[in-house]
Amino acid sequence: MKIDSAAMTRGPILKNIWLYTVPIILTGVLQLLFNAADLIVVGRAGGGSISVAAVGATGAITNLIVNLFIGLSVGAGVCVARAAGANDRERLRRLVHTAIPAAAISGIFLTVVGVAEAENFLLMMDTPEDVIDLSTQYMRIYFCGMTGSMIYNFGAAILRAVGDTKSPLYYLTAAGVLNVILNLIFVVAFKLDVAGVAIATSVSQAVSAVLIVITLIHRTDYIKFSFKQMHIYKNELFQIIRFGVPAGIQGSLFSISNVLIQSSVNSFGSVVMSGNAASSNIEGFIYTSMNAFNQTSMNFAGQNHGAKQYRRIGKIALACVLSVTLVGAVLGVSAYLADDLLLNIYITDSLEAIAYGKLRLKYISLTYYLCGMLDVMTGMLRGIGASLMPMIITVAGVCGFRILWVLTVFGSAQYHTLDCLYLSYPISWIITFVVELIAFIILNSRLKKKDAAEEKAG
Image (cartoon, rainbow, N blue to C red; front, top):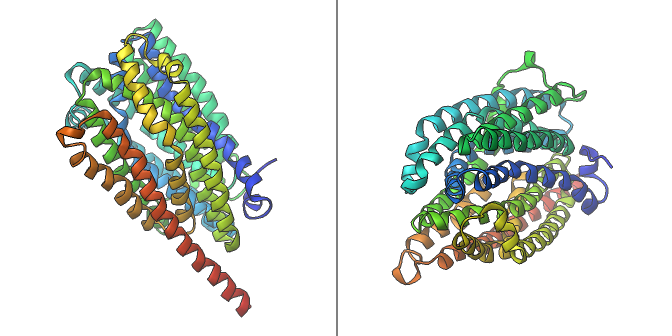
Protein backbone atom coordinates (compact mmCIF):
# COMPACT_ATOMS: atom_id res chain seq x y z
CA MET A 1 0.00 0.00 0.00
CA LYS A 2 1.29 3.47 -0.90
CA ILE A 3 1.18 6.22 1.70
CA ASP A 4 0.44 9.72 0.38
CA SER A 5 -0.99 12.96 1.74
CA ALA A 6 -4.52 11.61 1.55
CA ALA A 7 -3.64 8.51 3.56
CA MET A 8 -1.92 10.67 6.20
CA THR A 9 -5.06 12.75 6.81
CA ARG A 10 -7.68 10.02 6.40
CA GLY A 11 -8.05 6.29 6.98
CA PRO A 12 -6.77 3.95 9.73
CA ILE A 13 -4.17 5.79 11.82
CA LEU A 14 -2.16 2.94 13.35
CA LYS A 15 -1.89 0.95 10.12
CA ASN A 16 -0.83 3.98 8.07
CA ILE A 17 1.68 5.03 10.72
CA TRP A 18 3.43 1.66 10.51
CA LEU A 19 3.32 1.57 6.71
CA TYR A 20 4.86 5.02 6.68
CA THR A 21 7.42 4.39 9.44
CA VAL A 22 8.94 1.02 8.49
CA PRO A 23 10.78 2.41 5.43
CA ILE A 24 12.11 5.27 7.59
CA ILE A 25 13.39 2.76 10.15
CA LEU A 26 15.13 0.76 7.44
CA THR A 27 16.56 3.97 5.94
CA GLY A 28 17.90 5.11 9.30
CA VAL A 29 19.44 1.72 10.02
CA LEU A 30 21.20 1.77 6.66
CA GLN A 31 22.45 5.29 7.29
CA LEU A 32 23.83 4.18 10.63
CA LEU A 33 25.54 1.27 8.91
CA PHE A 34 27.85 3.87 7.33
CA ASN A 35 29.41 4.48 10.71
CA ALA A 36 29.03 0.88 11.86
CA ALA A 37 30.90 -0.34 8.79
CA ASP A 38 33.61 2.19 9.58
CA LEU A 39 34.03 0.87 13.11
CA ILE A 40 33.86 -2.81 12.17
CA VAL A 41 36.33 -2.55 9.31
CA VAL A 42 38.93 -0.48 11.21
CA GLY A 43 38.43 -2.64 14.30
CA ARG A 44 39.01 -5.92 12.48
CA ALA A 45 41.17 -5.00 9.48
CA GLY A 46 42.69 -1.67 10.50
CA GLY A 47 44.28 -0.45 13.71
CA GLY A 48 42.09 -2.39 16.16
CA SER A 49 40.57 -0.86 19.30
CA ILE A 50 42.65 2.33 18.99
CA SER A 51 41.16 3.01 15.55
CA VAL A 52 37.68 2.24 16.91
CA ALA A 53 38.26 4.77 19.69
CA ALA A 54 39.55 7.33 17.17
CA VAL A 55 36.43 7.10 14.99
CA GLY A 56 34.11 6.96 18.01
CA ALA A 57 35.68 10.06 19.55
CA THR A 58 34.47 12.20 16.63
CA GLY A 59 30.78 11.32 16.94
CA ALA A 60 29.68 13.71 19.68
CA ILE A 61 31.49 16.78 18.32
CA THR A 62 30.43 16.02 14.74
CA ASN A 63 26.78 15.81 15.82
CA LEU A 64 27.14 19.07 17.73
CA ILE A 65 28.32 20.92 14.62
CA VAL A 66 26.04 19.23 12.07
CA ASN A 67 22.77 19.14 14.05
CA LEU A 68 22.03 22.84 13.64
CA PHE A 69 21.86 22.40 9.86
CA ILE A 70 20.07 19.06 10.08
CA GLY A 71 17.48 21.04 12.02
CA LEU A 72 16.90 23.16 8.92
CA SER A 73 16.01 20.00 7.00
CA VAL A 74 13.50 19.23 9.76
CA GLY A 75 12.07 22.72 9.25
CA ALA A 76 11.82 22.11 5.52
CA GLY A 77 9.95 18.88 6.17
CA VAL A 78 7.47 20.52 8.56
CA CYS A 79 6.77 23.34 6.10
CA VAL A 80 6.27 20.95 3.17
CA ALA A 81 3.97 18.71 5.24
CA ARG A 82 1.78 21.62 6.31
CA ALA A 83 1.66 23.04 2.75
CA ALA A 84 0.79 19.60 1.35
CA GLY A 85 -1.97 19.16 3.93
CA ALA A 86 -3.40 22.54 2.93
CA ASN A 87 -2.90 21.70 -0.81
CA ASP A 88 -0.95 24.95 -1.29
CA ARG A 89 0.81 24.08 -4.55
CA GLU A 90 2.65 27.35 -5.16
CA ARG A 91 4.09 27.31 -1.66
CA LEU A 92 5.27 23.74 -2.18
CA ARG A 93 7.12 24.78 -5.34
CA ARG A 94 8.80 27.69 -3.59
CA LEU A 95 9.76 25.56 -0.57
CA VAL A 96 11.44 22.89 -2.69
CA HIS A 97 13.43 25.39 -4.74
CA THR A 98 14.51 27.20 -1.59
CA ALA A 99 15.44 24.09 0.38
CA ILE A 100 17.89 22.52 -2.08
CA PRO A 101 20.20 25.54 -2.52
CA ALA A 102 20.00 26.14 1.24
CA ALA A 103 21.17 22.57 1.74
CA ALA A 104 24.14 23.05 -0.60
CA ILE A 105 25.19 26.28 1.13
CA SER A 106 24.92 24.59 4.52
CA GLY A 107 27.10 21.71 3.37
CA ILE A 108 29.83 23.96 2.02
CA PHE A 109 29.89 25.96 5.26
CA LEU A 110 30.16 22.78 7.34
CA THR A 111 33.05 21.51 5.21
CA VAL A 112 35.03 24.70 5.73
CA VAL A 113 34.45 24.72 9.49
CA GLY A 114 35.02 21.00 9.97
CA VAL A 115 38.26 20.83 8.00
CA ALA A 116 39.71 23.97 9.58
CA GLU A 117 38.80 23.31 13.20
CA ALA A 118 38.73 19.51 13.57
CA GLU A 119 41.85 19.24 15.73
CA ASN A 120 40.87 22.19 17.93
CA PHE A 121 37.41 20.69 18.55
CA LEU A 122 38.96 17.36 19.56
CA LEU A 123 41.49 19.04 21.84
CA MET A 124 38.64 20.85 23.62
CA MET A 125 37.14 17.42 24.34
CA ASP A 126 40.36 16.19 25.98
CA THR A 127 40.79 13.50 23.34
CA PRO A 128 43.77 11.31 24.42
CA GLU A 129 47.09 11.71 22.63
CA ASP A 130 47.11 8.13 21.37
CA VAL A 131 43.97 8.70 19.22
CA ILE A 132 43.79 12.43 18.44
CA ASP A 133 45.83 12.31 15.21
CA LEU A 134 43.67 9.53 13.77
CA SER A 135 40.49 11.25 14.98
CA THR A 136 41.51 14.53 13.33
CA GLN A 137 42.28 12.75 10.06
CA TYR A 138 38.92 10.96 10.06
CA MET A 139 36.95 14.08 10.96
CA ARG A 140 38.49 16.28 8.26
CA ILE A 141 37.82 13.80 5.50
CA TYR A 142 34.32 13.09 6.83
CA PHE A 143 33.42 16.79 6.69
CA CYS A 144 34.44 16.94 3.04
CA GLY A 145 31.25 14.98 2.35
CA MET A 146 28.92 17.40 4.13
CA THR A 147 27.39 18.92 0.98
CA GLY A 148 26.18 15.51 -0.14
CA SER A 149 24.91 14.74 3.33
CA MET A 150 22.95 17.99 3.59
CA ILE A 151 21.35 17.67 0.14
CA TYR A 152 20.31 14.09 0.90
CA ASN A 153 18.77 15.03 4.26
CA PHE A 154 16.86 18.02 2.88
CA GLY A 155 15.65 16.03 -0.13
CA ALA A 156 14.62 13.06 1.99
CA ALA A 157 12.71 15.37 4.36
CA ILE A 158 10.77 16.81 1.42
CA LEU A 159 9.87 13.37 0.05
CA ARG A 160 8.82 12.04 3.45
CA ALA A 161 6.67 15.09 4.11
CA VAL A 162 4.45 14.12 1.16
CA GLY A 163 4.39 10.43 2.05
CA ASP A 164 7.29 9.00 0.03
CA THR A 165 9.41 7.11 2.56
CA LYS A 166 10.54 4.41 0.14
CA SER A 167 12.73 6.42 -2.25
CA PRO A 168 15.17 7.53 0.50
CA LEU A 169 15.35 3.88 1.57
CA TYR A 170 16.24 2.64 -1.92
CA TYR A 171 18.93 5.26 -2.44
CA LEU A 172 20.51 4.79 0.95
CA THR A 173 20.57 1.06 0.32
CA ALA A 174 22.62 1.64 -2.82
CA ALA A 175 24.89 4.11 -1.03
CA GLY A 176 25.28 1.74 1.94
CA VAL A 177 26.39 -1.16 -0.25
CA LEU A 178 28.86 1.15 -1.98
CA ASN A 179 30.15 2.32 1.41
CA VAL A 180 30.90 -1.22 2.57
CA ILE A 181 32.65 -2.10 -0.71
CA LEU A 182 34.78 1.04 -0.57
CA ASN A 183 35.60 0.41 3.10
CA LEU A 184 37.03 -2.99 2.21
CA ILE A 185 38.96 -1.61 -0.75
CA PHE A 186 40.49 1.36 1.07
CA VAL A 187 41.21 -0.35 4.41
CA VAL A 188 41.97 -3.97 3.49
CA ALA A 189 43.58 -3.45 0.09
CA PHE A 190 45.15 0.01 0.42
CA LYS A 191 45.73 -0.01 4.22
CA LEU A 192 44.35 3.51 4.68
CA ASP A 193 42.79 2.72 8.10
CA VAL A 194 40.53 5.56 9.39
CA ALA A 195 41.22 7.73 6.33
CA GLY A 196 39.89 4.95 4.11
CA VAL A 197 36.58 4.60 5.93
CA ALA A 198 36.13 8.40 5.98
CA ILE A 199 36.65 8.59 2.20
CA ALA A 200 34.18 5.74 1.69
CA THR A 201 31.55 7.50 3.79
CA SER A 202 31.97 10.83 1.98
CA VAL A 203 31.71 9.20 -1.47
CA SER A 204 28.60 7.26 -0.42
CA GLN A 205 26.92 10.41 0.88
CA ALA A 206 27.56 12.12 -2.45
CA VAL A 207 25.93 9.23 -4.32
CA SER A 208 22.81 9.32 -2.11
CA ALA A 209 22.53 13.08 -2.72
CA VAL A 210 22.69 12.68 -6.50
CA LEU A 211 20.00 10.00 -6.42
CA ILE A 212 17.65 12.08 -4.26
CA VAL A 213 18.01 15.12 -6.56
CA ILE A 214 17.31 12.98 -9.65
CA THR A 215 14.12 11.76 -7.96
CA LEU A 216 12.93 15.29 -7.26
CA ILE A 217 13.69 16.28 -10.86
CA HIS A 218 11.53 13.43 -12.19
CA ARG A 219 8.56 14.05 -9.88
CA THR A 220 5.35 14.98 -11.69
CA ASP A 221 3.66 16.79 -8.78
CA TYR A 222 4.28 20.09 -7.03
CA ILE A 223 7.53 19.08 -5.34
CA LYS A 224 9.18 18.61 -8.75
CA PHE A 225 12.64 20.23 -8.73
CA SER A 226 14.29 22.17 -11.54
CA PHE A 227 17.75 23.73 -11.44
CA LYS A 228 16.42 26.63 -13.53
CA GLN A 229 13.85 27.49 -10.84
CA MET A 230 16.33 27.38 -7.97
CA HIS A 231 15.86 30.49 -5.90
CA ILE A 232 15.95 31.29 -2.21
CA TYR A 233 12.51 32.76 -1.59
CA LYS A 234 12.58 35.00 1.47
CA ASN A 235 9.22 34.01 2.99
CA GLU A 236 9.80 30.28 2.50
CA LEU A 237 13.34 30.54 3.88
CA PHE A 238 11.99 32.38 6.91
CA GLN A 239 9.45 29.60 7.52
CA ILE A 240 12.13 26.91 7.19
CA ILE A 241 14.29 28.86 9.64
CA ARG A 242 11.35 29.40 11.98
CA PHE A 243 10.74 25.68 12.36
CA GLY A 244 14.25 24.47 11.64
CA VAL A 245 16.48 26.66 13.80
CA PRO A 246 14.79 25.68 17.10
CA ALA A 247 15.08 22.03 16.04
CA GLY A 248 18.72 22.58 15.09
CA ILE A 249 19.55 24.44 18.29
CA GLN A 250 17.84 21.69 20.25
CA GLY A 251 19.92 19.06 18.47
CA SER A 252 23.14 21.02 18.92
CA LEU A 253 22.52 21.79 22.59
CA PHE A 254 21.48 18.17 23.05
CA SER A 255 24.88 17.28 21.62
CA ILE A 256 26.62 19.64 24.07
CA SER A 257 25.57 17.39 26.91
CA ASN A 258 26.81 14.40 24.90
CA VAL A 259 30.12 16.19 24.26
CA LEU A 260 30.44 16.79 28.00
CA ILE A 261 29.68 13.14 28.68
CA GLN A 262 32.11 12.04 25.95
CA SER A 263 34.76 14.22 27.56
CA SER A 264 33.98 12.54 30.89
CA VAL A 265 34.32 9.14 29.22
CA ASN A 266 37.62 10.24 27.64
CA SER A 267 38.98 10.93 31.12
CA PHE A 268 38.84 7.19 31.85
CA GLY A 269 41.22 6.40 28.95
CA SER A 270 41.20 4.86 25.47
CA VAL A 271 40.03 1.39 26.60
CA VAL A 272 36.85 2.82 28.08
CA MET A 273 36.47 5.02 24.98
CA SER A 274 36.62 1.95 22.76
CA GLY A 275 33.92 0.09 24.71
CA ASN A 276 31.79 3.22 24.89
CA ALA A 277 32.10 3.81 21.11
CA ALA A 278 31.09 0.24 20.27
CA SER A 279 28.15 0.31 22.67
CA SER A 280 27.05 3.71 21.38
CA ASN A 281 27.02 2.38 17.85
CA ILE A 282 24.85 -0.57 18.85
CA GLU A 283 22.48 1.78 20.67
CA GLY A 284 22.38 3.89 17.54
CA PHE A 285 20.39 1.19 15.77
CA ILE A 286 17.81 1.30 18.56
CA TYR A 287 17.64 5.08 18.54
CA THR A 288 17.35 5.27 14.75
CA SER A 289 14.45 2.81 14.81
CA MET A 290 12.69 4.86 17.47
CA ASN A 291 13.50 8.24 15.92
CA ALA A 292 11.61 7.18 12.80
CA PHE A 293 8.45 7.67 14.86
CA ASN A 294 9.58 11.21 15.64
CA GLN A 295 9.57 11.95 11.90
CA THR A 296 6.26 10.13 11.50
CA SER A 297 4.57 12.01 14.34
CA MET A 298 5.86 15.34 13.04
CA ASN A 299 4.75 14.79 9.43
CA PHE A 300 1.39 13.20 10.30
CA ALA A 301 0.67 16.00 12.78
CA GLY A 302 1.80 18.61 10.23
CA GLN A 303 -0.36 17.19 7.45
CA ASN A 304 -3.45 16.94 9.68
CA HIS A 305 -2.86 20.40 11.11
CA GLY A 306 -2.61 21.79 7.57
CA ALA A 307 -5.80 19.96 6.58
CA LYS A 308 -7.51 21.14 9.82
CA GLN A 309 -8.12 17.55 10.90
CA TYR A 310 -7.50 18.50 14.52
CA ARG A 311 -9.42 15.62 16.07
CA ARG A 312 -7.01 13.06 14.61
CA ILE A 313 -3.93 14.62 16.21
CA GLY A 314 -4.41 13.14 19.69
CA LYS A 315 -4.97 9.69 18.21
CA ILE A 316 -1.78 10.04 16.16
CA ALA A 317 0.17 10.92 19.31
CA LEU A 318 -1.16 7.89 21.20
CA ALA A 319 -0.46 5.51 18.30
CA CYS A 320 3.10 6.82 17.92
CA VAL A 321 3.90 6.67 21.65
CA LEU A 322 2.66 3.09 21.95
CA SER A 323 4.51 2.05 18.80
CA VAL A 324 7.83 3.64 19.77
CA THR A 325 7.63 2.14 23.27
CA LEU A 326 7.16 -1.32 21.80
CA VAL A 327 10.04 -0.93 19.33
CA GLY A 328 12.39 0.61 21.89
CA ALA A 329 11.70 -1.99 24.57
CA VAL A 330 12.05 -4.99 22.25
CA LEU A 331 15.26 -3.76 20.62
CA GLY A 332 16.76 -2.51 23.88
CA VAL A 333 16.25 -5.76 25.74
CA SER A 334 17.51 -7.73 22.73
CA ALA A 335 20.72 -5.67 22.58
CA TYR A 336 21.32 -6.18 26.29
CA LEU A 337 20.80 -9.95 26.09
CA ALA A 338 23.11 -10.23 23.07
CA ASP A 339 25.78 -7.84 24.42
CA ASP A 340 28.74 -10.22 24.11
CA LEU A 341 27.86 -11.23 20.56
CA LEU A 342 27.29 -7.65 19.39
CA LEU A 343 30.34 -6.07 21.04
CA ASN A 344 32.64 -8.78 19.66
CA ILE A 345 31.69 -7.63 16.18
CA TYR A 346 33.42 -4.31 16.87
CA ILE A 347 36.20 -5.22 19.29
CA THR A 348 38.42 -8.30 18.95
CA ASP A 349 41.54 -7.34 20.88
CA SER A 350 40.36 -6.16 24.32
CA LEU A 351 38.13 -8.03 26.77
CA GLU A 352 38.33 -5.02 29.08
CA ALA A 353 36.90 -2.73 26.40
CA ILE A 354 34.06 -5.20 25.83
CA ALA A 355 33.29 -5.19 29.57
CA TYR A 356 32.97 -1.39 29.53
CA GLY A 357 30.71 -1.62 26.50
CA LYS A 358 28.43 -4.06 28.36
CA LEU A 359 28.23 -1.65 31.30
CA ARG A 360 26.94 1.14 29.08
CA LEU A 361 24.41 -1.15 27.37
CA LYS A 362 22.96 -2.07 30.77
CA TYR A 363 22.09 1.53 31.58
CA ILE A 364 21.18 2.88 28.16
CA SER A 365 19.65 0.15 26.00
CA LEU A 366 17.28 -1.18 28.68
CA THR A 367 15.72 2.26 29.18
CA TYR A 368 16.05 3.66 25.67
CA TYR A 369 12.30 3.45 25.00
CA LEU A 370 11.95 6.51 27.28
CA CYS A 371 14.00 8.54 24.80
CA GLY A 372 11.73 7.37 21.99
CA MET A 373 8.65 8.52 23.89
CA LEU A 374 10.00 12.03 24.38
CA ASP A 375 11.08 12.20 20.71
CA VAL A 376 7.51 11.44 19.63
CA MET A 377 6.22 14.26 21.82
CA THR A 378 8.81 16.58 20.29
CA GLY A 379 7.62 15.61 16.79
CA MET A 380 3.96 16.15 17.70
CA LEU A 381 4.66 19.61 19.12
CA ARG A 382 6.61 20.66 16.02
CA GLY A 383 3.94 19.27 13.71
CA ILE A 384 1.20 21.38 15.28
CA GLY A 385 3.32 24.52 15.02
CA ALA A 386 5.09 24.78 18.39
CA SER A 387 8.66 25.30 17.22
CA LEU A 388 10.24 26.93 20.28
CA MET A 389 8.48 25.02 23.05
CA PRO A 390 10.03 21.55 22.47
CA MET A 391 13.45 23.18 22.12
CA ILE A 392 13.15 24.95 25.47
CA ILE A 393 11.81 21.87 27.25
CA THR A 394 14.45 19.54 25.80
CA VAL A 395 17.32 21.93 26.41
CA ALA A 396 16.29 22.30 30.05
CA GLY A 397 15.23 18.70 30.68
CA VAL A 398 17.97 16.85 28.82
CA CYS A 399 20.91 19.19 28.28
CA GLY A 400 20.53 21.24 31.44
CA PHE A 401 19.94 18.26 33.67
CA ARG A 402 22.87 16.23 32.29
CA ILE A 403 25.28 19.15 32.50
CA LEU A 404 24.18 19.80 36.08
CA TRP A 405 24.52 16.10 36.87
CA VAL A 406 28.05 15.88 35.47
CA LEU A 407 29.19 19.02 37.27
CA THR A 408 27.64 18.13 40.63
CA VAL A 409 26.79 14.47 41.26
CA PHE A 410 29.33 12.90 38.89
CA GLY A 411 31.81 15.63 39.77
CA SER A 412 31.99 14.49 43.38
CA ALA A 413 34.68 11.96 44.28
CA GLN A 414 32.13 9.54 45.75
CA TYR A 415 30.09 9.22 42.56
CA HIS A 416 32.80 9.73 39.92
CA THR A 417 32.01 6.42 38.20
CA LEU A 418 30.76 5.29 34.81
CA ASP A 419 27.61 3.90 36.46
CA CYS A 420 26.75 7.35 37.81
CA LEU A 421 27.55 9.00 34.48
CA TYR A 422 25.30 6.69 32.47
CA LEU A 423 22.45 6.99 35.00
CA SER A 424 21.95 10.61 33.90
CA TYR A 425 20.44 9.40 30.61
CA PRO A 426 17.22 7.66 31.76
CA ILE A 427 16.54 10.24 34.47
CA SER A 428 16.72 13.10 31.94
CA TRP A 429 14.45 11.23 29.51
CA ILE A 430 11.73 10.73 32.11
CA ILE A 431 11.74 14.37 33.21
CA THR A 432 11.62 15.71 29.67
CA PHE A 433 8.89 13.36 28.46
CA VAL A 434 6.54 14.26 31.31
CA VAL A 435 6.90 18.00 30.69
CA GLU A 436 6.46 17.65 26.89
CA LEU A 437 3.40 15.43 27.39
CA ILE A 438 1.78 18.09 29.57
CA ALA A 439 2.57 20.77 26.97
CA PHE A 440 1.08 18.67 24.17
CA ILE A 441 -2.11 17.95 26.10
CA ILE A 442 -2.62 21.68 26.70
CA LEU A 443 -1.98 22.68 23.06
CA ASN A 444 -4.03 19.82 21.64
CA SER A 445 -7.00 20.73 23.83
CA ARG A 446 -6.82 24.26 22.42
CA LEU A 447 -6.92 22.88 18.88
CA LYS A 448 -9.99 20.80 19.72
CA LYS A 449 -11.73 23.84 21.17
CA LYS A 450 -10.85 25.82 18.04
CA ASP A 451 -12.28 23.05 15.86
CA ALA A 452 -15.46 22.91 17.91
CA ALA A 453 -15.87 26.69 17.72
CA GLU A 454 -15.39 26.69 13.92
CA GLU A 455 -17.97 23.91 13.53
CA LYS A 456 -20.44 25.81 15.68
CA ALA A 457 -19.85 29.03 13.75
CA GLY A 458 -20.16 27.20 10.42
